[in-house]
Image 1 (cartoon, rainbow, N blue to C red):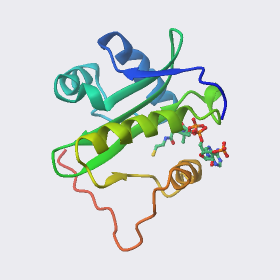
Image 2 (image 1 turned 90 degrees about the vertical axis):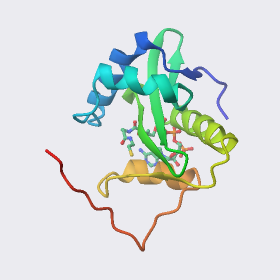
Image 3 (image 1 turned 120 degrees about the horizontal axis):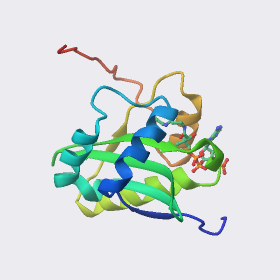
Image 4 (image 1 turned 90 degrees about the horizontal axis):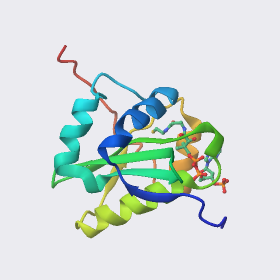
Length: 141
Ligand SMILES: CC(C)(COP(=O)(O)OP(=O)(O)OC[C@H]1O[C@@H](n2cnc3c(N)ncnc32)[C@H](O)[C@@H]1OP(=O)(O)O)[C@@H](O)C(=O)NCCC(=O)NCCS
């Protein structure tokens, strides 16, 4: 494995705008992705919001939602110029380690069917595809 050139640490308030920029670049930003929402989430879930840093450069992000019952990985993203260097692997391993420490047995991730790269990534990490469920949505707008 390549020598570690990034460190994984918890999100800090000063990182939030850079995270939103990265998520935008990766087409992952939704209506809930605001600075205020991240600040709010940091109050309870800071340990499940991780960034990958190459010195002062933010190059990756992942967070997990955990309500004491189930957990979902969310917004895994790596800067295009840092891909295929195991940054997402490092982020995912660390967040899974933290979730396991909380006693969790299963972790889920939503992946768009057209996102073959992300599916390849999650399979490589040992995630399995659920074939007996559909994901449904209700809009409250
Ligand atoms: C998906 C993503 C996070 C992967 O990040 P990454 O840091 O490049 O991933 P890693 O280097 O840790 O990859 C680990 C393994 O995943 C698989 N993988 C990653 N990218 C792949 C690709 N483009 N094609 C095929 N397999 C891929 C490979 O098995 C890879 O191991 P290998 O390089 O030894 O073959 C990154 O491509 C990304 O940010 N995509 C845009 C945002 C996105 O779609 N996020 C997921 C939302 S569900």
